[in-house]
Image 1: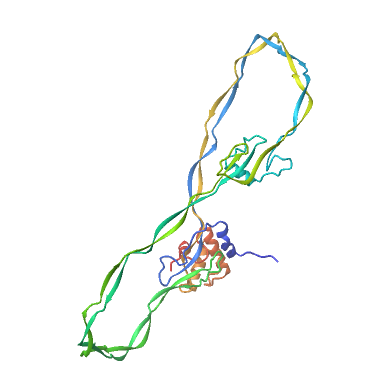
Image 2: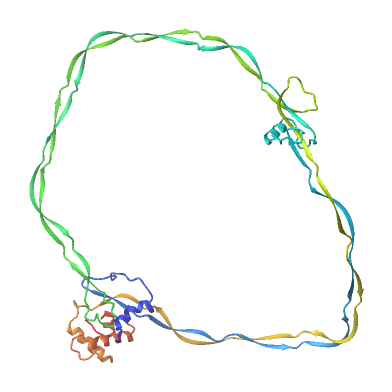
Length: 461
């Protein structure tokens, strides 16, 4: 089944192809009541201008001047100088060397006996802190740990068991009974409300003011090829009123003020003669003498070589460290080592020269450029002033269209060579096609019978 695309569909697709996208107001500008407008396709506008066009670009002509030479004799090297190299091999010799196959091992133990146990890291750290140089000590040296016990002494001290302070004695207040008149309810003013009085009345109220609104209109030529189908008419709508019943204030609400006397009562009360007094009594501080045991000196630890004499005050702790050593193991091996390294003797062979005839360059070849100017020609061009776009135009619609107007349009189209058919006042397919062709040929807006089109057909309403 073949689908024939109507001119209207093509016109609707124009904005997606060659019509520049422009924002068009949803309401026609500067509209008047009673007139109708349609959003139509406005064709592009052009003007003819003269422009200087380059028909031949600037260039240059290039010519070559050849290089010049002369003959001359020249001594050249035919065999370059070289070197003759003679290799001399290296010589070797045998030597005997003692190497260590197992290093000497030093260990701190509890004694110099063969089956003595090794000392813990904690004991070694204590010995180092106690004055033993663990790194510089020689194998066979032993050290013992000694200590001096802490010392205490007896002292007496006066301790404060109660601070110096004041004790207070309270002397109570003295009163007498007297009569006193008091206000139990003060004088005041009472406000009494007098209600308002109303009456019923009728009144006409404006519920909707006079206004003009845009309404969708119909165009007898709205099916012409290229029409957008959007027609707007500005219509005047009169004001609307409503009769309502109102409750009107006749006399407003008021108030009146009434004076209220105060109320009193006689009661018996206590009257202060002398106020409560406080008397301070000083109390001395209290002390108690006690006997305390105080630390005079902390216990100290030290390490000494077992060969040295120690003071009687030093007590042996039972800890001892001794440095033992297992000797290293060695082995003799025979090695072949380099005695005289290999070398290369060098002999220089001089170069060989010959005299030959050669060409000498006098002047190099060069390029000569001769400029050629560009050629221009004046040409007429059609320049676009505005692109095809959608806009509002005043049109004929049902409010101002009749058979007489349609007959005038048909006659005018026929006179200008556009076959609109018989001038019968009926807007048929032939008239619509002739109108659309006339608008496109004359670069007029399409999509409705605009007043611009009527002007082009010399039709006055």
